[in-house]
Amino acid sequence: MSENPTSSQVAEVAIIGAGPSGLTAATRLTKAGLKPVVFDLNAAPGGQVYRQVESPQADLRVTGIDYRLGQRVVEAFRRARVDYRPDSRVWWVQRVDAGFELGVLHEGRSAVWRARRLILCHGAMERPFPFPGWQLPGVMTAGAAQILLKQGGLLPEDAPILVGSGPLIYLLGWQYLQAGHPPTCILDLTPRLQWRLPLRQPGKAWHARGYLFKGLKMMLALKRAGVAIERDIEALEAIGDKVLEQIRYRQRGHWKQRPASLLLSHVGVMPETHLTRSLGLTHRWHAEQQSFLPVRDDTLSADENLWVVGDGAAIGGAVNAMREGTLSALEVIASYHGLTKKERHERDGLRRERARDLCARQLLDAMFLPSLNIDAMPEETIICRCEALTRGDLDQAISDGAEGPNQLKAFTRCGMGPCQGRQCSLNATLLLSRRLAQTPDQIGQWQIRPPVQTITLGELATSSMVENRVT
Amino acid sequence: MFRRLPETASDSAEVTLWVDGEPQQVGATLSVAAALLQQRGWAEYRLHHDGTPRAPLCMMGVCHDCLITIDGEPNRQGCLVIVKDGMRIETQMPAAQPTPGASTG
Ligand SMILES: Cc1cc2nc3c(=O)[nH]c(=O)nc-3n(C[C@H](O)[C@H](O)[C@H](O)COP(=O)(O)OP(=O)(O)OC[C@H]3O[C@@H](n4cnc5c(N)ncnc54)[C@H](O)[C@@H]3O)c2cc1C
Ligand code: FES
Image: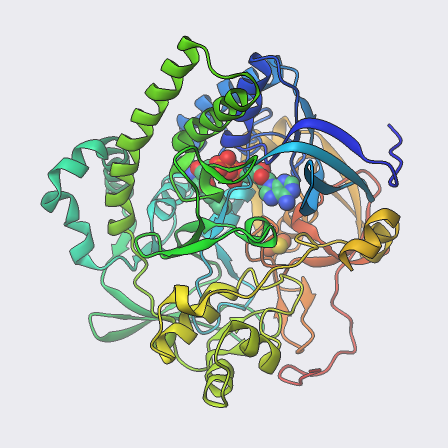
């Protein structure tokens, strides 16, 4: 298909992301006779959780039974014959009179799309977890290791050390165990008190029982297999000359050291807010999720004709993402021709299930509340990886008078590297918030301008129509 | 280094990648960054502008520590590009670089 970059293509509804939320939204819209277009930068549908689900590289015994649900969702999506565009990065979005315009990069060429309605299903990212030495080769995130496992059946040659908090740490440990290659140990950063929350909140624990049992089962399997689970970890350092060689950690006041070749770290996930921020949507600090979330109304809409669903809006997990995807589709259908009685019934049922699940989620959020304080990190800890700026560098700029994110950026170049602040923006705001004794909402985050995805000069040259608009 | 699960290795298609001029057989579903982590590990992936070695952190397009030259084009995100037969990869590890710690500003 040859695309003329100077003329735009049109869709009734544009969906960004083919993870659980985008897949269900598209499938439901199609069932109602609407014609959405779905863009995803990955080569295959599934998103983060169901990556590579159509041609699995590791069997279900390893990836876990939840993967089967993903297979069903992707099959339904394929049957619906949606206009699905893999390998397509949406690198800018803007509001125009009659809806939205999107810049979509595919095979080195950029095309402009227009759509009346837009559903953002772009998902989450792992929370950046800085500690001294986290920039060393040999330190990766647990999510990255899981992507390697799903995408290519890749396992670390030598048993890794897992560190952090949150369900993904135990899930990955369990997956490695199932593959016959367990980690050497798991260093758990979750404060002990937080593990006891289910006992103190039995109502929420009941709603969350599915998640809790699954977690417990994995933990027990790891323990039985002899994987050491170390708790009360208070501080962490990665040490090495050119690559990771050792880790040091403080446990109940005592420093310990271990040789390590691969350290997989993780402290939970949070919405990726580049797209929503570039659209100028309001974001609010959510203390339980320790993240900025785009503000939505009860219909999951963040603005006129714009819905934000799934983990890109607030962390709710894969099943919630599917519910929200379907709910957003029903809202779009309602905006076209109202809902039938049956559709209203479907919507109300989904809303009830969502409310119940979010109640369980509150408990999980509290249990896995990240305990790291950015301002307490040693001053040599790199915060902005791209510009190699340390906590000390940022503190210096704050004492020199940087009063907000934009000034901090101007003083230090923090957030101006290729990742566009994805790894440092939140931590810069949190540091400012601590030092200036203001809430994260008062400090805010720096503004995001397109491109929201990396684009090369050659690719930019294909988008003549776009140039005068976004550069 | 990473290795493939035995069951994956036995029934999965492969392509040939040219890494710094050397041919490498890699799994067809892998991203460029994943293929390198498997074939070579993380030790010699990329030299950052401050002279320190770096390697992929997130594998999902967030961190940009996987930047690499693909078919002559520098600074592509290796974790987001799936390998293709005949693809030419150059790791961004120039021999003559400032010593670690030197800053380029
Ligand atoms: C690394 C990682 C691993 C995870 N592993 C698990 C797990 O094992 N089990 C679990 O239950 N949950 C896991 N999660 C949580 C996950 O967020 C949810 O389970 C679920 O995937 C959320 O679904 P979603 O539809 O909201 O987003 P996602 O599944 O994240 O899908 C979003 C899709 O949008 C695409 N996208 C984003 N931006 C753009 C753009 N600008 N242009 C084009 N496409 C774009 C992405 O490539 C992605 O395919 C993981 C999260 C992360 C970040
Ligand atoms: S590894 Fe993080 S962007 Fe590629």
